[in-house]
Image (tube, rainbow, N blue to C red; front, top):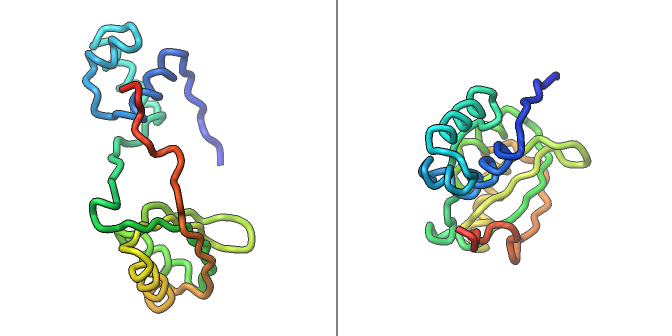
Length: 151
C-alpha cells in the first residue's frame, strides 16, 4: 500500500496541533495563534482536508458522565472476524478497536458501567461477537487525556 505524503510546513504543523486539541476553534482565533489572517488559516485548513491530512473532525466524550466509569483494554482472539467487526463497530461501549499482529487478533479500548458492565460486555462479545479468548487490563489512570492548560 502506498501513501502519498503531503508537504506541510511549520505553520501547518502548528495548526494541526491546535486543531487536535480544539477542532471548533474559530479561524480568527486560530489565525491569531499562528500569526495569520482568518482567511489564510481557513485556506490552509481546507488544503489540509483536501490533501487528506485532516480526515475528520470529532469529539472527545467524557464516558464517566454517561455512567461508564471503568475503562479497559481488551486483547481478543476471534473465531469469526466479520462477526466480531460488526459487533465491535456497532457497540457504543467500544471506543477504539484495531486489527493487530501478535498473539491476539484485535486490540480494543472500552468504557463500561463498572465491573458489572465490563463482565456483561465480555460475555456479550463471546456469545454475540465470535470471540474465543480475551485478556483484559483495567485502566487505573489514563494519561494524555487531560485538558490542555494553555487553552
